[in-house]
Structure formats: C-alpha cells, structure tokens
Image (cartoon, rainbow, N blue to C red; front, side):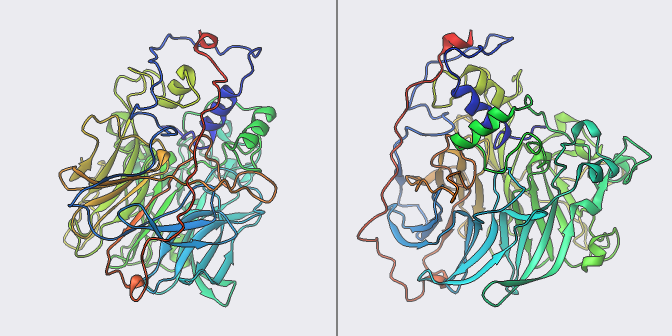
Length: 555
C-alpha cells in the first residue's frame, strides 16, 4: 500500500509543476492517454474552478446546521442549509479540527506557531476551548521535540480529551526495535500514541491514561532484534515492517521549494520526509464498549484498542475488560499487514474518519469510514504518479484509462460473539467480508478524494459526507440520493508567523478535513440567535495561473 501524497507526492507534484522550460524533461517510460482539461469535469480532484457555495437543497434535506472549517484559516463557521454563515468563532491560530459541545463551547485542535521536529501534514500541538462568544477558556500545549498532537481529538463523556500524538524515536531505536534499516530515516520514525488529557486551569492538563503503538510491534525479519515473532501468529500486534510505495528521494532544493509553494511545513527535511510511517488521522470513542478506534491510513486499516485498561495494562497483552491489554482488539481493511491475506483482500485504501454510529441511529454500533483511494483494477501505475506524469494543466486532473480510482463511504458491522468480543478465527482475518452499506457515485469515479474527508450517520438515517480534497459536502439518503450539497467557498490564506503554511495543502485551496451536521434542537443552540449574519465572510476566488508545464515537455 502507499503512503499518500499528502506530503511526499504532493511535494513532488509541486516540483513538477514549478519546473522551468530549460529543466531536464521528465522521463516517461510508458505512453499514457491524456484527455484535454475541462474545468467542468467532475473528476477534478481539486475543484479549483468549480462554482462554489450551495449546489443543491431539496425538500428532503435534514433541517439543521453544518459546521465547517475553512482551510488556511483561524475561523470556524456554522452555516444553515442555504449556505449562509449564522455564527463564527475566530482565534489566533490555524484550525485543524473542531468539536461543538452540547453546552455551546467549541473545542478546536489548532496549530502551535512554533512546533519543532515534526512535518507530515495534520500537525497541531494545541487544544483550545472557546465559549459561544469566542472567549478562550482553555489552552493546552503538547508540542516539543519529542511529541506533538496531530490530526484529531475526541471529547470523552467525563470531560477529558483523547488525542493522537507522535513520539519521536531515533534511528538507532527503531532499528533495534526490528525495523528494516533500509526503511529508516536519519531522523528516525514517529510512531503514534494516544493520550487522555484531563483539563485543569487555563492552560494545564493531566495525562491520566496513555497507549503507545511502540509497545505493540511485531517483526519477523531479524531474530536478533526486539519484537521478533511470526507476524501471522500475532494478528493483534502491528507489523513494524509494512512499507508504502515511496516516490523518489527528494533533494534539499525540492524540500525548500515545497515550503515556498505550500506543500510542506517549515520543519520538513530530507532526513524526516518518511518519518511519519503510520499517519494516524482519526480517533473515535465508544462509551458503551469503552473502546477507541483509530484510522491508520499508511497501513490502510482501522484499529480498535481497549480503553478500560490501566496505563500499565495498556503496555502489555493482558488485562482490561476484553483481556488483551493494549494489543489490538480489532482491525479491518488490509489483512496482508498481519499475514492473513493478500493484496486482493485489501478493502481500505488510505482511509479517513472512522466513527461509531451512535445509539438510536440507524446502524447503531456499526463503524463508518471514508475509503479514500480505492484502486482501479486496471491501473498499471500508482494513481498519484499517473497524475504527475500526465497532467496537462495546473488544475490537476485524472487521466482517462489510468487513474480510475474512486472513493466510497463504508458502514461495517464487525462480527462479535455473545459476550461482545470481536471474532477472530484461527488462521483467519477479522471480518466482515464486506460492508453492510456503501456509498459511491452513480458513475463511481466522480466521487473521489484521495486524502482528508469524512462521513457520519445522521439521526434520520441519512449520511453527511465530506469529499475533502475539493471541499464538497453532501447529505445522502440510504439509497444514495443527494438531498443537499455545498462546496466550501472559503480560504483565508493564513500563514504561520515565519510566513510558511500551517499545514500542507498545495493546490487544494478549498480542502475540508470534515464537516458536521447538527439538528436544530442540538442543546448548544438553545436560546441562540442563528439568523444569517448580515455581513457574510468573503469567499476566496481562485485564479488559474498560466500553465508552467506543457504536454510537449512530457513526451
């Protein structure tokens, strides 16, 4: 499976599109059919020239409000079904993700202005809570040389916050842990951990529980190193030697150009460009089960761990309600990772936004996930490389007969026994064989977002979907009918204090990580005025630059 271009390939794309006429031409080993660029083409993965704002509002659209976060912005907007902003929160820092509490407070994951070390997209480092009027109530920082909160958080019923965090490991440490030395950067690797934070005071937080991926590795390439064992015999462990299909090695010049063009953050270096080897991008909590789900897209898997353990039990393989300590209770999407399947068995492809369907909702207790980059069976080259090698326009497009990848939203029902434990038969992979519900476009290929994105079940059984790369948000019914559709029109062009981007987005100027629908009776809205603001935020208008590269230079 591939480590997606959200850092690596997007940076190379930047380099390709910024080539000068006298640069050495790209070598294309196989001629690939390329169609003429059409700004109305629905397969454009950026949607840069698309009409923005409200696209569709039918009588069947579910009343309520949608929360969005403009890219490159310090703002969070609440919009009505007419696409009008009814309320906004604004802070000083760029926003990565946000959650609206029933009491009307907003909790946001934000980008620390001077976080060190890490550079892989989704970096954050700060959690802040605001009241309805935007007054800051809590400002927690977790950003130093050894650890950094990134991508997503989850609010727990007890008031605590779960967060995904990198923890830096040196080159020597990861080799001793059994990583193939050929796949180790000089900067080392950044495995993930989950921390539970109990807020206190204006800026403090106590870590009351934690789980480390580092404690649950397995490798079978070197018996003299740590974590040695037969991968297929340890399906609850994480294979330390799963590798993506990396692009060519990057030069310092390419890295620096990537920073200038907004494809890379200031901390990116030649030595750390592959350090984020899992890219965990979502976290969810199930109170009934006391379990945590995470999305690990570089493995193309979702994984579930036991939150009922103590921190000590979470380091081992016993203890907790389900008896497996911190080992995986469940995983799904790519059984080849644990030696119980092949590439043909892979179901997830760089997925995002795993969630449980809440109690009382259709599909209660099932899992939902946005499956980003489902590979076309006839593809002869990785999809992003096809784009890079054949694009005729700065509006990145999908070559006919080559890309053919698409996205889907899956609803899964994990098989469990009478006690509620996930079923894993001897020498078999975790089920199910297929989702119980899937959303794809009628033509399949017009619904495509190779990164970010999300989906969540609504109370009436509809699903709100965010096709994130182009900032497209839509409500669909159980039979796949689109009853409401909106394309984010905002980008505030926020830059870090040093002038660099807060998070790499490159040409994806309208990108949305996810959007959230709230019913009109959501408790946060009690006694609140939710009329359209008299002065609406100013939309961002993208202007197509002259093409920096022609098809002739690719021949």
